[in-house]
Length: 89
Image 1 (cartoon, rainbow, N blue to C red):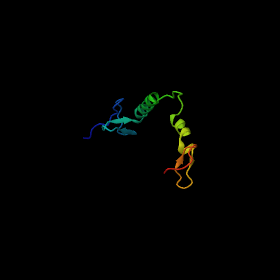
Image 2: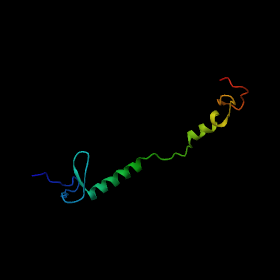
Image 3: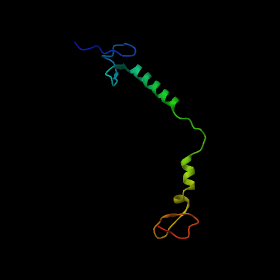
Image 4: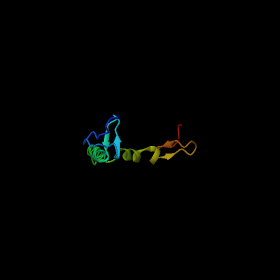
């Protein structure tokens, strides 16, 4: 005789119903599995980092970057500062 297939959460017999098996081999009825998934997603949403309003550090660095804002050497394309007169590369 095979083991009974019962939902680990509510105890309902799921042998003839849609069911899910977790990584531990336990059965979940569709309703309980859906509720558990929704609870996990809600918990993740609560733990998501909040915007601190401090700006974007990467954007600030890119704006100051010589490679983005500066000129390039016409011979080798090395980024130069705007004050540079000749390339030493």
